[in-house]
Image (cartoon, rainbow, N blue to C red):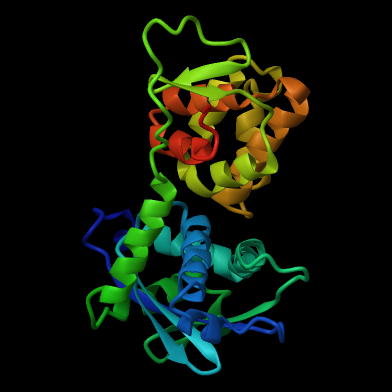
Length: 293
């Protein structure tokens, strides 16, 4: 496949994913029309699913989310054949649907499992009918060129998502220089003192949502002091949860760290690992509610 191996940016294509919840209590179309809260949550579900299924944040962009009653239509432009092919593999295996259900259930705080019906189209071609021929699906997407630029509403939602991922920088009172050493139950980050504690389920969720493809780097940093994450444990995790996507790989990594370290799995260790990996914005997001007064 010459196109797939070519330079990034020379390959483009467009596909539309149609989504419909089969759970009576959840109407994705109605939720997306809710500008107060529902629209952003549904967009985040879609974005996280694409990140999982296309192998990261690059290689694609959402152009528009539109009403296609009873479906919600998501128009996606691909500019990397490899990312598009990975998405097709995830879609054909059912991983895209599983990821949608997982993220929707978590972000919408549902008490019951949600089932999502999907359909994938490129121009007039229904790709669900030829998923056993992924190269043909890739060709259909390549021949379907985007007819619009990214919608202004999508630009706004992307900015909102980015702002949420970065999180507000905590602003505790400055520590006076003559205040003495940091207490044993605290740690310093960016010249501010935070109370140390055991890692929580909320920490695991924030980490898994924000770390993306960098989860392996953080795992190796944590592995310096955790035998359970020594080589080849991280590569094994990557292989074992490859179909589930980046969120689940990151989730399993930190869960394994907590299981191995027990009460010694501290917030300070995760923050230090994130700092070592230059992921300070994610550390700030996790620390947002933890400044020591």
